[in-house]
Amino acid sequence: MVSTSEYPVIEHIELEPRWVTRQVKLDAVKAHALAEKKAAPGTTMRSSQDIERWLESLEFELAPEGHVICRKKLREVFDAAALVGDIVNDDTFTSAIGMFLRRRFGERLIKVKTLYNVTCKAVKSELFKRPRTDKKAVRLKKHGARNPAASRTVEADDGVSVRYVTEFMQLGCATELLQNKLFPDAKELSESFGAFNAWRNHLSKAFRADDGDVTLISVGDGQTPRTAALFAYRTKWQCIAVDPEMNEKGQTYDIQRLQHFRAKIEELRIKTKRALIVMVHAHVSLEATLASITTSDGTCGCIALPCCNWYAAIDTDHHPKVTPEYQDMSIFSPHRSARIWENLPCGMICKPAM
Image 1 (spheres, one colour):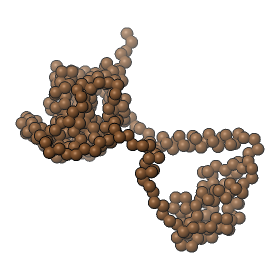
Image 2: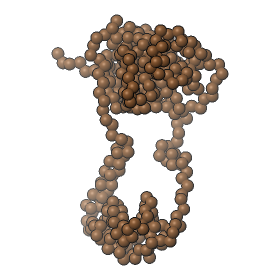
Image 3: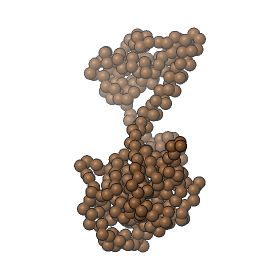
Image 4: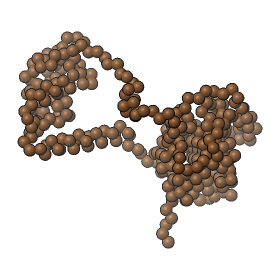
């Protein structure tokens, strides 16, 4: 049966970059701390002019070549010399030092992050030694200990089948798939066919190929809408491919019921009657994907082939899988695990009041 409904409805939203969100939170914390200091009795807010007068007394000179002083040490000396109750904003202090030194030394001043090629009587310059960063320690401090279930180290197995290549060669749409240059290599072809085979074996009764109310959403489909196109040719569904690396420059595909978006799934809001998600080696969590989808009954199916360090993020303990996770030996990749759900919770379309 083929539906002529108005679905799917797709809305593209713009997400705020994560660094902007972090900076806004940091600025709010700094502003709160400064407000508390100002509110304390007997405090005086020092201006940039006060700081520059203090800097003038330090008798700055250019440091020997290769020597620098750190702004943090200057701030420590200033705080030690300040009167009880004096308050100086970090941004004000940084700006005052920069303007003072540029005025004094002009183009001879060299600044690298918080380091300046100057010296003074209060803070002597030191030979600059580039610090060696312990990247593992930094990553551990930022993200915490690694979850052993988040990623897998797997080895290739020689017992790989070529059944999907054979199936592809026997398809009536094989010529169109090749002409559209959807599959760059056999590996990508086998992954898309592996997702299709998972639907065929485990979800074809719940999501029938002739049900036009179904929308397939291929998340992380790659530079071409390869998995969505395969389903568009072989079903009657509306098929949507989403990937931030999708190549859209002058590229069109003469494939019915196929749409493709150069975007993250978090940037889309997809509303449809029924939905089946396909995540072939997608680098996004299952939770974030479900948050972008709304259906008539508030549920959707999902076929996931996780990879890299996304094994834990593309999983859930709260909803049973249709079949235990299995290894598809016809996929030409060491990451060939398949996970399948029939009823995962997502957003529900609100019915208009009668």
